[in-house]
Length: 335
Ligand SMILES: [Fe+2]
Image (cartoon, rainbow, N blue to C red; front, side):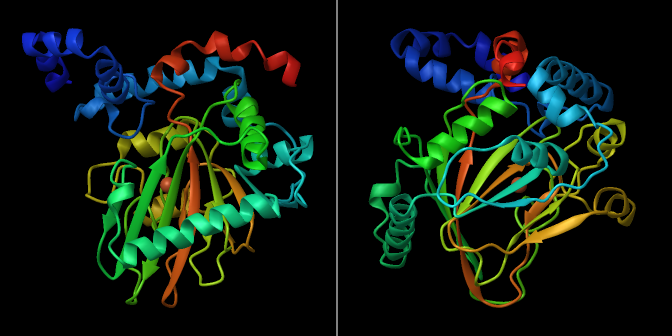
């Protein structure tokens, strides 16, 4: 917080704003207007942390879509399947949304058309070839990340619009409208893992049991090749529901270097990992996941590769959370 205040009173920064307003908007969105995560405003005080969390949860509850998916527990004891076959169609039906609401995860098999599936597979093949030939210049403006080691993790992100006719866009728009209240434009991150040496050591926020945030969050994960070489996605069903026990986990968690959203103690495992499931998927599968629930990549058991296209919704910001009434307008129409 202090560093932000220092930046605000620095006159050099004001000159920079006048000279380049669009850069200012980007910095503002990245540093102040970002959707609240697990940094808790960079405070170490438990009281401020609690205040900060309560305020964000207060606004999250005001969004009627969030309230329905993340706060209402409901009395329905009938278990709903997690997996559905879309057969290349794109309409998400009410049972599928009920599954997402109850389980926190929805697995859509045969999700994209052959054309889209092939295009994404081609993009991954090109990325893998370019990485192995060290031809990385074209990715340098795409937030390229390469973390070397026995578990090679590489990714790049594009913000260009999805084709209006693509199933991926149609599915993403329907799900974001239902979860947030408006269709949100995703960023697309091509993520590639390659494990060359066993064991697959724990990487917080990746192959450990963790939550991405403590307030409502959605991600779509597309597996063009499925998970034939291992490391399927795993999820603890129902843990996306935000209640007192859930919030206390984040409030009381001490810093350990393993990430503030990572489950570490046996007591927490007992509380939050009661109903876990691994999703070993076929090629052309799309997983919608409420990623404030506990999840992770299953560690590789043998050497192998994994390709996932992640759709993330950072365009829904803190200001979107606060201006909940704009997102509530569609609520009655939807339900
Ligand atoms: Fe995650």
